[in-house]
Length: 360
Image 1 (cartoon, helix red, strand yellow):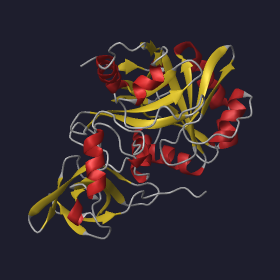
Image 2 (image 1 turned 90 degrees about the horizontal axis):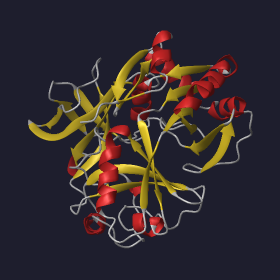
Image 3 (image 1 turned 180 degrees about the horizontal axis):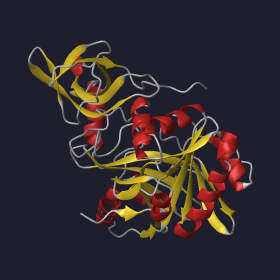
Image 4 (image 1 turned 60 degrees about the vertical axis):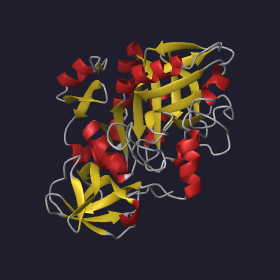
């Protein structure tokens, strides 16, 4: 396995007292102060994250749209410049090899995935280039994420620029202090969110400019511990926890990654068969766990001494003040309100996702 990417600002964060850790293939802040306070800042005001754990590459060439459209699970051909989608690359058995965010620019497709998945994604895509005029280019871009009810104002003040109206996945190019940027509307924790893609050299200036606005927007710098509790509350699955090579998209409720009208792609027959059958055998659900500490990933779920599921992620929710988990449960036991137990003996009740939904 490749060595993790180190955030360009890692040494600076350490000098400010942050705790660093590895997250999805990158060394980034785990927390700056108290992860509960950071979590609450995102829910009530704004948080600033280092997203160096996301890696980007581009597809260029005449056939780029047609080529990618035929191998991923969502509709690439329908994208206009400035739009984007979520998609998966599947194996012939319909299981998820990697998940991707795909953005259309004027002369290329931009692909964003976790740092620990980029090599895998690039190798999979290259495998399908046979006679297509397609070129892959790795991009040396990093990202900061602004998330929370006051994130838009914070970002506008940081960039000295009014943002245009943007829907999720929409994006535009701009610049800051001479550095080219791309602003992407993207929620990563259930609140209004924006990612700003920038070079390593531009990271410090952008971070400093945003941090300088912190008092006016009640913003806190945030780490991945807060990001995890935020995304669990919002019911957002992640590769390596809820998603993997043993997972079907419909098991993980990834309807936003699928097009049922685009025609053939790798794994499409299995996806369509599951849809036409009306169910899959396992479902990703929320769980309310009657325990003071979060259960471990991989802990089994029990009903009448029979294993019926498994926990994938968990946290003590700073918003709801409850122990929450995501996990897979056999479909016949996946109804909200179903009473299960963890293998360690704690009550676990199936709940609808998301646990938390922001007010519009």
